[in-house]
Length: 326
Image 1 (cartoon, rainbow, N blue to C red):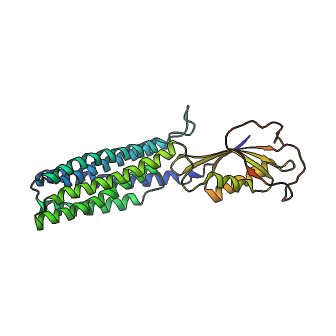
Image 2: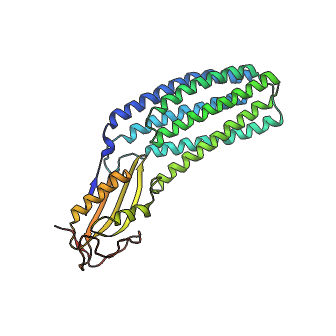
Image 3: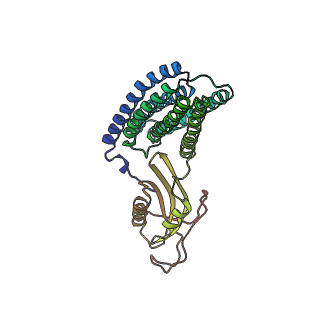
């Protein structure tokens, strides 16, 4: 058995992670300062839309704090029983962010429907100007987090929180303008329902993507059947089976497989060739390939031998395989 545990992910990781933390920290400071003022103004204006925005900003802050904690935990080197380290801490953070969004959305749907039935008096002018300030703050926060590494579900979770809050502030500003200029007080409740819908959408997306990682599904964009067939086409490869491809964490795909090689092929050369294909064509650098010779039979390392194929991926025994020990 031969494994190649590539660690190309680590190049520049220290610098990248430190930059990500700075961007997230800057966004967190902006959000906390604005959120404090928005809660006060929302209570004074009796605006559910503003209060729901403030609550959304609180989840933004919570999401960023979780992201910062998860980044530090995930960066710890493997030790003890955690042979991959704690990379999936960021996935748990993303799931918690998604669940928080969905629970808050449910609450604001309930409150918004009640206010549609019995709309209270709302100070539309305060709602409008506060929302405009919120748009400016969220634009700055979105720009900061957008500069971080969004291939991480952890960072993407925080980014989705901030981005959805930006859309929510635009909706709330429109609602405030309608209340202020037309006296349409139900606009505030409608604005809060729009915020809730946005929260549901992003929360579901985060739960879905994080769930794929936790369930060890193949990374998005990689079809295991197509990948297996591609490997089976390589010179000297007779068969690929027990193929598994999954993500340890965001942007960290891994693969293992059992490879049967032509009886006259060089197992080590085949392994290196397959690893090169996986690295260059699929971005998979963490691979574990068990390479053995196929049962002795006629055939050489060229196009003369029979068709190669991908066997049933379920584990099974193979009698008569000569181990690759040269």
